Image 1 (spheres, rainbow, N blue to C red):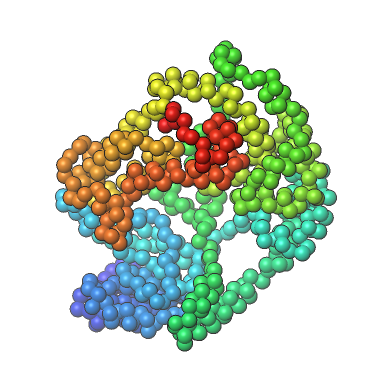
Image 2: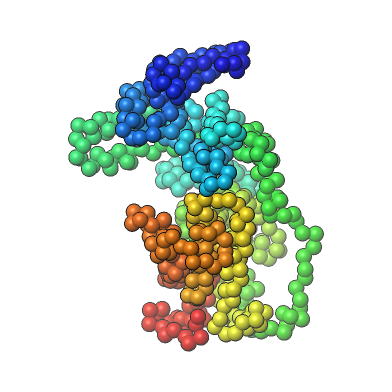
Length: 575
């Protein structure tokens, strides 16, 4: 077989008549030492020429039946590498070898039947797993599933190289640091440096980083110690398999999170793989700029005629809104922010300010009073980061909380007129809500997917994720009409069985059975009426346990009127 003058090859024809596995390597780049050849796998060591990298590699191509795979599983168990980096790639896995799937990107399915006329079958057969030693030394390496080209399998690429240059994680205050005996002294000393609050926070940030390094340094030694403790617990488990306490201790001991949540590479829009940190940063920024748009050159002014035509606040309410912010209001706003909320751009959460309030409050008071009197905000307070978790307790959000608290006290004076104008704008009567756009949106999404030749599994996944998500926002706010829910489910049902949105009687299984869990023979789809009830019930929990939310305050002022929510009669005009 010719592939290149420097390439060497190994196969398992001596163990399998069909020669199921071929192993090739560039001898100018790596050294490969084949240790074991089996009918269904080849095990070897791969090392770079400078010996800086050395791993164990097992390539697996299992037979089709479980009975035929038993010798393969026993052979892989006999290898079981623990203290050296070990990769196991192929279409089979041994559960009891403590292997973890390597994070991946690219195509999700790794095999297809290459059908062009009959229904196409897709499956994620080929996977790559690594042991704990691999994750510790090569946690940055990703499995990339490439286009299959002429093969029915997708090639799998792993770039086993040194970790890319990383700029570190942004600072984040961890609540556990506040329990350190030197924490308050450290903050007190650092707070004296700098003139502005932002400079003082940066000084505190550096001091806390140093404190954190001293307290939680030598992490590698602590990891080794944790591994020894885990091994001791597992040895005891082998001797006493019925001891449930040992299983609980093992669960507590396993807390390894390798470098699996950082972005080492991404696919560009034209399917080009980017691995340079600067290129990745530029691509992410460009994506969100195109998604969120640019700054508007001008903003429309408020229509004073429309504002004056509507109901206005009383003079008492106006005076209440413009009065100076008191220290008590700031204290109440900070107290109302939960300790577990995500940190803001500067990395400090509300728990930090609560714990150090006696040190920082005078400067914080001065900054907030300055904002409410002059109307200017430091640039650093109003910056943000793109994240999946909203940032609540930053300075700008603390300001927002003070403002919304005041608005909540007077919002009831104008809410009736706003409701009337909104109903007139939408063309609906009292007590009705226009849900027809929801049905139209679901139908449009289905029609957009009709051109794709999807299998039942593909259409099922679309119904579960994309199409179900369309009604999620509505279902979490309103109790949808039964007619609307039945119509949406009819669209889902037609798309699942026929691939279109047109009404059809072709249903292989009743929809009630499709919505059952998989253990009961269903496909684990969510029933829209049941989901709607569960989502709206969550609002009752918010009303009972989140009194600081502005909409909860409005409900109490407008509907409950400071009465017991459990005994308050339901108004006749409520939907």
